[in-house]
Length: 399
Ligand SMILES: Cc1ncc(COP(=O)(O)O)c(C=O)c1O
Image (cartoon, rainbow, N blue to C red; front, side, top):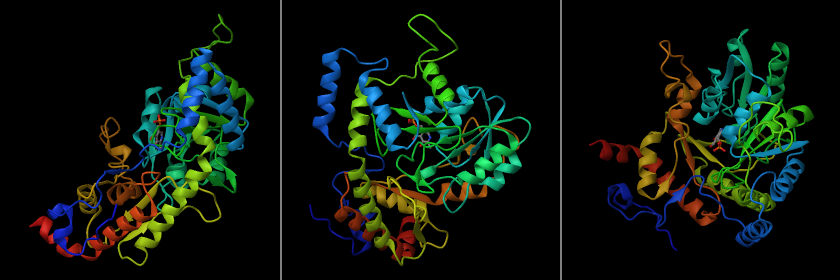
């Protein structure tokens, strides 16, 4: 298909022109990598009549992920939200938990749902992960745990966070939902802190339809997570503790295992798209792309842009224009968690300047197999056109 560049305002779909893309492009559109391998594994599971309860595919997937993530234990669970809850339960966290205000609402909900009180902390402007200095000011005798989020696959300042956690003797959990394959000090994320939790949701870099992994190097914690995810059963009849059902099924494992085998290909693909986007907007005023830390590996799953205050149009206007062109860009995470129910209901609402700025300025663009270099270049040219002609577009849209 040939994409026709926009040369005048009337070419924009928002002003009546033809949308740039015929099919809607999505952020986090599931990648279907190797259909035959998935189906063959699903058939094997059906032939075995073993569909859940610690099946062979789940076991194989756990072992492969442990190797890939360079960690002793990778425990498959139904999703990362439940994984975070198992982490809090396994560590017997009580009282307050400190989490970044700029994250997916699920980080907060998972913790609040286990009865913990949420204390928010702002994030760093450079990579959008929890601000260690801000964190220190939030710690009190009620603090039961710290949760860092490796947002967009960018590692938190792990060494600093670990020092703080050690000094105050509180556990450190990482929400690594976005971070499969990314590294810190050249080591894959997964073995840092007490426990890490990855998401294998359909929209993630490696997906198992729905799913998650709890990872750790601590044998005792791993045993406890395994018990917790299966009602606390130690054998067929005996229950040792209050558990829940957080088991992954075999079809999900078939998908997760197959997608893990395809990870290098997907990472390389997304890396190229990143480079195309970066080149496409280079030299343009008012917009920048978030880059992974230098020298570290990254999954390149998210293409995150910031539309700065000095841009000729604001993020929300650019977003409207892109949606009209069938680019379903996203404004993650808007608003910040502290501004969403139930967390915004407290009388004295805290202000988190970095979170509030990011939630007003960030825009995520599509990546993955639905894209190719031509589409990425074409989309970059559209953004360039919008920002160069921003003043005119704005006056027309606001007229
Ligand atoms: C940062 C973060 N944490 C947790 C989750 C929850 O993951 P899941 O959908 O696997 O429960 C997500 C999902 O998008 C997320 O983005």
